[in-house]
Image 1 (cartoon, rainbow, N blue to C red):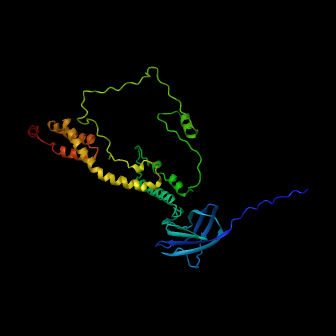
Image 2 (image 1 turned 135 degrees about the vertical axis):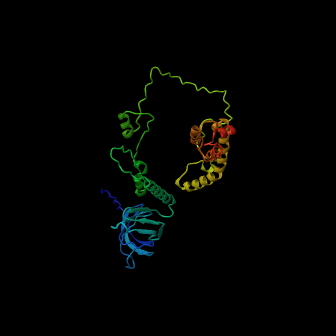
Image 3 (image 1 turned 180 degrees about the vertical axis):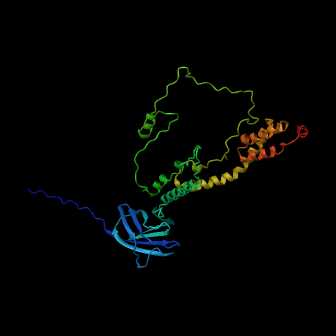
Length: 359
């Protein structure tokens, strides 16, 4: 009796498909080569954009070029990677739009990017993938802001026999993490990482464990024998009438605003633009009310603490006291305006008779 041998199904080979690529160049002509990489659900292909369909020179000023290529079908296009292959630093390619036609599918990309010798790679996503496009826009905006802020710091000259304590604050303007987020694929999973934060001074071996250990636990500090375990109760002076105002520094300047109901949910990157417009609108509306409130409160505190008696002091101390008023009380725009109006009434260089008449 012969056993029937079942034939092993052969693996299906992906068919080739025609790609038609249309690019629109900006106002400046680009003289160089461009490589296009298409990432799809079935893999990655590379297409050099060197020879146009019509045979004309590509990437001319305000020109729309067509390129054709027949290669493997990558399925649904997730993103494209445009690589700049120029050698001159002043040779810039402004890509306004790019469109890819693959069989019966059409993918449009609103690129509007500039590639040069320094920034030689860009990830562009289809228009229907709004979330990925918005993330790329925010990352590029953040990189530009960090770069512009870093240019404001100028390294001073190092003078001989003088201490040199200049710090360029490089970690605060480091754009390497932003560059990595811009160029790395969005669909790759990253490995685990950990970093604990210490609330006290730690030993070197504890700092090493915090950096390289997973779920590292800090050792608890021992209490001194003389330290009581009971918490001391905070005593408040009930004789002070706290409704009359504040004798300490004013509150941190901020505009109080109500949070809309639709924002009481998990937010995504697509909500950033609407939140910014909401904050900007409410800040301008309620800032005037906050300014008027601080103006009246500072006036009440000024007279309640008898700060207007500065005219009775000597002229040498009078000017310093006014400076102290502005330093401690002038923390908001409203309080600054109130102090300017009140301190202008204090005669700084008055004679003795003028001071007595004022008192």
